[in-house]
Amino acid sequence: MSGFREALDAFLASPASASWRDLSVFRDGAVARVCAAVDTERAAGHVVAPGPERFLAALTLTPLNDVRVVILGQDPYPTPGHANGLAFSYVGPPPLPRSLVNIYKERTEDTGLAAPAGGDLSSWAKQGVLLLNTALTVREGATQASSHLKLGWRVVTDEILSAVSQRLPHVVFMLWGLPAQAKRGLVDESKHLVIASAHPSPLSARRGFFGSKPFSQANAWLGGKGEKPIAW
Image (cartoon, rainbow, N blue to C red):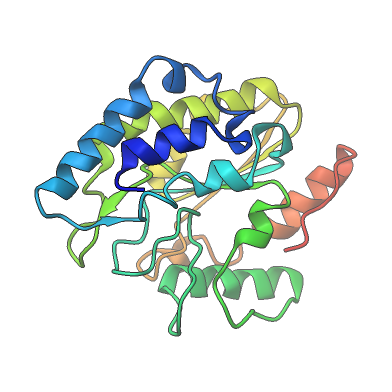
């Protein structure tokens, strides 16, 4: 497929979008307008990550009605070849992205599980962990982090978060870092659990991400609500 607009049309025509396509941002053209802006970026010569075939991977792998945990990132990895449409996930040769290394360190400390060799988090997504970024695309390059945050993705991802909060009974929202915590007002905390901490990036992980025990907290809370825990 040649562009993001075409990829969006293919997603909306597929069974994978069945639980998401009734959101107003898909019906009123909001997502289409952002995709058109991203295609304009590509036409101007910028390399965009992830590619069109992967930018909706989080929604494709995790239907709305299956969401049990939301892990909210800021935007995809801008390092060439790193982004794959799932927040914090990485499919490629070593070394792993440093934020993911720190997530694995906390996972080991929290659960006792050894860190896996690879960075593919699709097994989490298939269990109901919505690995969502606040922007679904980014320009590739070392200085390009946050480059697409103003293209219109905020409206889209805010509605996704609101739909999860409004339509589902028991979800854990992991808000890592200040940009993610700014979305806390979208979550109905009378029925959902929010776990807020510092971001796992090397710049901030030691300021509250390490030691936050998000994985065991999530599973204990889900179990208390009669929900199946996540196999982290």
